[in-house]
Length: 315
Image 1: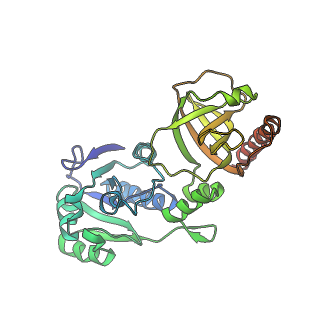
Image 2: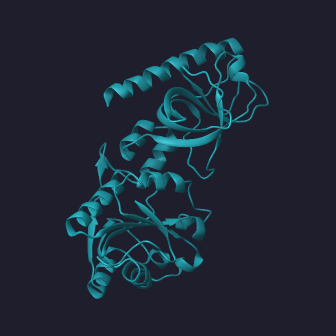
Image 3: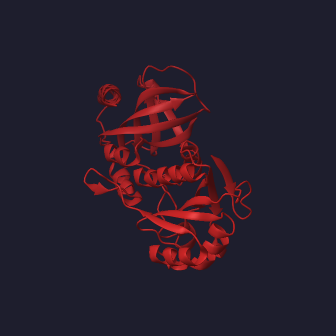
């Protein structure tokens, strides 16, 4: 997949025409994948180019920042996922106040037709665009007839008895329902961060932890709790137990994100670690003594190992 940015959109030839999809694609979930597979297949059959157009930042962050939610995928994550999609091009448009004032016809004509030579436009069932989201599927079909491109709508995808959507996934992340999140994404939900120095309490208790400073503060975090996780460190995968949230057993400590990696004993300060959430294990509770906490940490480690192993066997 090639990557380009508006305004100039370098590297997107218009000689054979494009099969295009447009959207925010937050999370890049199974519903999105259905659209991406559709445009990739159509491009292959027609010998055209498959092009995804998305926006950074999310339009709400510019137009109504007080209503904007944290992201399911950071810009870096989105690009990494799309690099494996089989698309020919992904165009990241810098969303700003100028672009927000584009009327539907202006957006379609100037960007999709004149810059990308769209021949077919494939969109989701709830697509809205243009100033104040005044454009919809009917608008696009009218513009398609006028400007010479075909419009097709991909119906929503259902899993677990409900439609897959970014809102559904966001609610599941907030609730810690990581099994539902994985079902909707088609992959484990992840965060990444740099290992930084902490208070060394985990090490002193016999369970050393890697304290993480998040790489992207706008990333949506699951609810506080203890999680079974998989971690990627220097290209290798390790199971682990993650603490996310307050540390009530010891007074005066702030909330933290720290992971105890199983079967691991290396200095990784300064390293980048990716954490994939497998399952929520338990709530965070205060303990009356360090000894009680140590006993529970041992149970958490074993529960995490068992949970990650069970998932691996089920794949």
